[in-house]
Length: 98
Image (cartoon, rainbow, N blue to C red):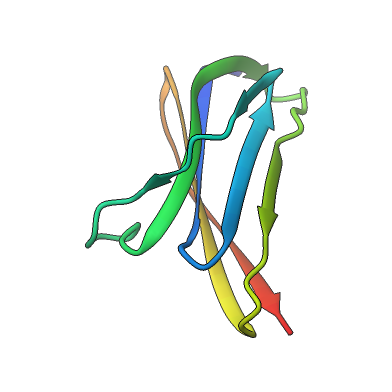
């Protein structure tokens, strides 16, 4: 099984300094603020659309360059992933700043 033309975005809280996202030889650094409301409200994001194909045995490194906020706490990062075959879900990552 393979997923064709995979794309993804990385959503982080506004108080992170989001710099760039890289994968499949593509780099993007134009940060966009998400519209208010919904699950992405109050966040900013970088995304790359339909950048590569991937079979289930392959791996692809994704690099996100960002600076953490100075404020301590738990922060949620959201990563929606999609392909030509359909939605691959929203993946959540929790970062704890001490």
